Each structure stands twice: as C-alpha cells, then as structure tokens.
Length: 434
Image (cartoon, rainbow, N blue to C red; front, side, top):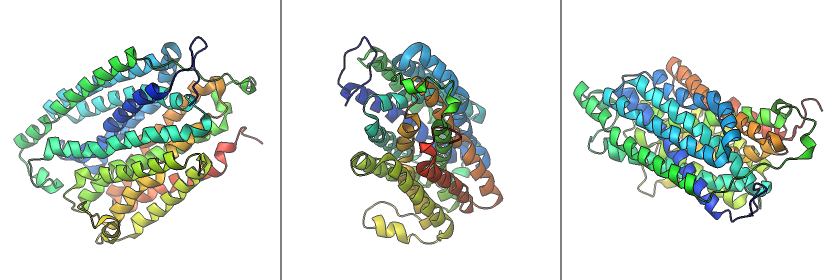
C-alpha cells in the first residue's frame, strides 16, 4: 500500500503502522463494548431503572461531541502520533477512576470515569480513522478500516466473556432477579471485583503509550488538493455534514444493538444476559470479514452502504414482529453447536451487528473524499457524529420504560433510512445547491 508522509520522510512499509493501529482499535473495542456488560451490572449494583442505567451510554458517547473539536485542535499542534499517546494517557486517568467508583459503588464516580474514557477515545479516534484513510489508496480505505473493525469487534466478542468470567463466574445464578436478591454487603463485594480488571487495563494502556511514543510510526498529512481553494470552511462540504448525520444514526443503532441486547435479554428472563453483547459482536466481525474480502474487488463502498441499510431495515421489522417465545431461527442457524440459542427478537438484535458492520468503514472514505486541507476538521465533525451513541439509546430507554423493550427498537428504523439516503445520494453532494 502507498502512504502519504510528511515531505521530509521516505516511504515506509505500512505493516508496522497497521499493527500499532490494530492494537489501538482493540483497545477501542475492549473499552467501548465493556459498556454492554456494565449496564445491566450497574443497574443492579447501583439500584437503577433501565433509563438511568443507560446514562452509561449517554456520558460515554457525549464525550465525543464535546471533545471532538478540541481533539482536532490538539492534533493540529501535536500531530497524529503524539495525539494518540495523549489520548491513551487520558484513558489511563479514566480507567483509574473506576477504583474509587467500585470501592464506593457510586454511580456518579462510574459516570465520571466513563466520560474521561470517552474523552481519551475521542482523541484516539480523531487521529486513527483519518490516519487509516490517508495511509493508502482511497479506493481500499474501507477495506483497511474493515480490518481494524475485525480487531475492534473481536474485542467486543471477548470482553463480555472476560467480564462474566472475572466478575460473575462463581455466583451460579446470574439472572437480574438473583443479583437483586443479594445483600448490601454482597453487592459491595461484587462491585469491588471491578478494581483489579481496571488496574490491569490501566497497565496495558501505559504500555501502549510507550509503544506509540517510541515506535517508528510515521507522521502523515493529508494531500493539499487545489480544488478546495474556493472553500472557506468545513460547512461547505455537504458530503461531510450529511456523513456526520449518517454516523450519528449508525452509532446510535450500533450502541442500541450492542448495549441494550443484555437489558432486552434480562427482561425476557435469560440467565446469560451479560454475555449477549458477544452475539452482536460476532455478527459484526462476520460483516467486517466480508468487507475485507469484497471491498473494493467485488463491492464498492457505496453498494456496501446500501446493502447495510437494507438489511438493517429487515432486522428492525424482525425484532418488533417476531415472537419472544420462539427460538426457531437461532436453532436453525447454530442449534447444532453448543452455543446457547436465543429468542427470535434477540436474534434479530444481534443480526443488526451484521447489518451495520460496513457502515462505519464505508462512510469515512466517502465523507472525507476531496477535503484536502480540511481533512482534520472533517474528521472531527465525523467523530462528533458518535454522539448518536449517547442520545439514541436514551430515546430507546424512554420508549422501553413507557411501552416495552421490544417495540422500542422502532427507534432504529429512521436511522437505517437516513443511511440509505446517504448511500444513494448524500455522499455525492458537493454543494448544497446544485
């Protein structure tokens, strides 16, 4: 693959940069998808309602909106490489915040730690995603991001299993009803179990800071395209503005599919509700593998986006119309294995992972195409779209409490419809008035 380096650098192999970025994307996934297990866990530990428990997604993802532009300013001063190291350092602070949070079982402390973690991830994502786009030919950018997605969602598969093994392994019955029956002392002891895993996570982040800081990771810069000389600001690029809205819709759907599936399973009385996020992540990994194989050889980034939106619409209809008393679909798909089957609506929630897997890698190169010197600003704007993960799950939670968790998934339908619009028309717009 080609690379775009600073003028005083010689072209280098992209193997080492891709390896380091892969480690960072693993951390993205591990920290992000831990929320899917934390939400039902903290609901019990801190005695929360479903709506209150979803503050986890609100504070974690709202950090992307608040800190995206400051992150772009930081990167403009430090460069991508140093910016990644600073992002990891902020994450260390957020991780250590979980120690007093777990010791006191204080929900506000947990939320503070999550916001700080989200801030660190904002810096990392603002640097890492455009880095991947610029690192090689734009036609294969979605393939490179898909590779990172496999690593990211692979972490999402692992983390619920690790969480259950470290925190819940010796409890026997881990249903929400059984956990709620524990005494105050038992709940505190359960909360204390979070301390050691987060200490280990802080140590791993410190190691990554050293790796990034002292590695041969090259500094890159976006090409300065002449056709943008008539543009005075990022708001003059419709493909970026609409791309940020599409990412807002996508991340909201992604978080709903990954972080509410445990709550949904808990409401249906499933005993393995803390591991259900893994089902969604497995489907996402399958989607990313398809992206690596098919893009751009067999499938363009545009058509990958169209396919994702269409399958997502099918999943939404499947969730709200299928019976929670039947597990017929998962029995057909994997009933011959030792993997636990799930009710049909839960299956469709997990399948949403496959539906939207290629949205993120497809939108980034389409939205950043032609930005030139505005690439850093465009990246920050796209990162702000991650706030969909803060707001849309809260809407889901409000509907779930006033109606039921199954019908609340209707909130994702408009999201897939907008993604379909962006795939068909939005990404091609180069002016607000043609």
